[in-house]
Image (cartoon, rainbow, N blue to C red; front, side):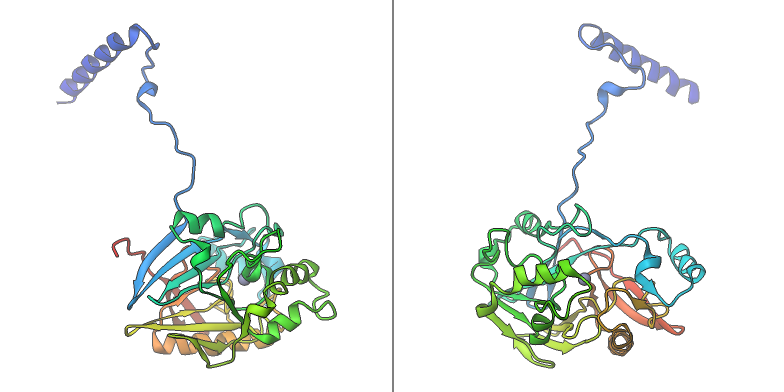
Amino acid sequence: MKGSLLSRRNVLLGAATCAATSAIPFDPRGAAAKAPMINAPAPYYYRFKLGNAEATIISDGTLPLGDPHASFKGLTAAEMDKQLADNFLPANNAVLEQNVLILNTGDKLVLFDTGMGSAKDFGPTTGKLLATMKQAGIDPKDIDAVVMSHAHIDHCGGCVGDDGKPNFPNAQFYITQADVEYWTDETKTKEFPSFLAQARKNLLPIRDRTVFIKDQQEFLPGVQAIAAPGHTVGHTIFMINSGGQSLCYIGDLTHHPVLLMEKPLTEFAYDTDPKQSAQTRVKMLNMLAANKTPILAYHFAWPGIGHVAKQGDGFRYYPQAMKMEM
Ligand SMILES: [Zn+2]
């Protein structure tokens, strides 16, 4: 059997040699038959139904935080290395995603957070929001509402272009008053000068089109604000309900699917009040776990949808498979 396969292969090789002699030198490794590498990423969006609404997750690109030992505090280096190694994650670079949600309720097209815009504080891979929206067939002019979880650079950075004009010219903007006031005030944000500059660039030109949201308020049909302070003073998560289904957009309640989950009182260097942030994280994750509410985590591995459950002293994140049929 083996012999006959080999001899058939020789016959085929011989035929290829004959065909190739007139033009291309014959390569016995079969190089002439190889397809070129495409060498371009797949479209960076994901679409699914949520009750009566249509949801599209749009990436603004990956955000490499660098050495996790510098950003996550409270674990020993050995504990952190073990948590990362046990989850097959590198010990030297925590790469976050930026999973932006666009929700079409049927009446309104709502964008949740806007990515980094043109700021390159975390390298060249961010700032893809508008390009990805184009891939997904969504026109920025059609966005009715831009909802922001908080005023950090990677959430408000895409509101306004470098020309000073809003990227979403027909939208109303929704965020807490506390965050706008904090992050546009140079007396309060000395620690992160570029966060101040980006908040001012993006939030001041849209000030007259901004609606301040309040805890527990259903400020758009099916979209309820839930105050989740600590990461920033006004950090807010959003409970979305449509046709009997729900999804909690958790913003920056947790930045890492392991390091802020297994020991959820671990602190994060970019938190305005790390202790309050940790308490909020535990309280909200307890609620989401108890109710088995699906979550969309802005910074978790693409596309950031799954569930949380209690495990040991903390929580475990269970990513959900993408459903490619609508
Ligand atoms: Zn963030």
